[in-house]
Length: 226
Image (cartoon, rainbow, N blue to C red):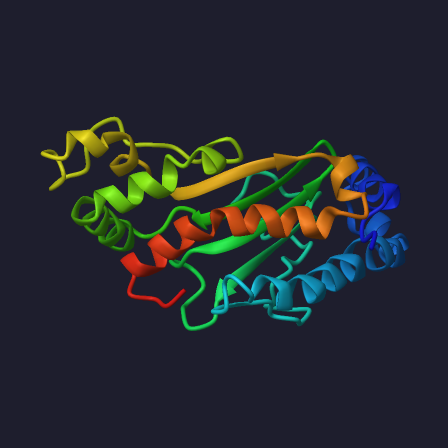
């Protein structure tokens, strides 16, 4: 099934040039027809298939507060006062966890920038340190997961890192690169052509399944079932 088309990406290209309420209101039906509803249908179809290998993860199928991010930007604390995001994105949370500090699956669609991600982006320090402690106590499993050839050829770690070892972990120099990360998230890039193709859903599932062992590890670090 094809979910996203040229019209999906054309909408965001036009929005980038006309990021104002009057233009958006005039083209809101295009947003609903070519962005929101296709994304919601994609998530509905993804949900039962994802549960085969990640049964504790679920799509939240609702307009506000659901898995799909709203298009409206929160510009209160930003210099960029444009009212709308120029991308479509969605996240899939753990069913038994809060949304901020737990591993999740993520999808991002934007002209010339399509990617999937899995893991934890910018968690609170106490949560990140909990993962770090688990990592130094279970290093072999972490290496086996993240150094797997099929995993490494598909994913890159994202986010920034500390310049020095985090306090309390200085003696674990063999895990320095992993412990210095401020996020524990991996990213895999895709293309617009893939997003507009009939195999996009299966391609996303393949990538999410490939990330599942790392997600399982992070859930274990946080005492969550996977």
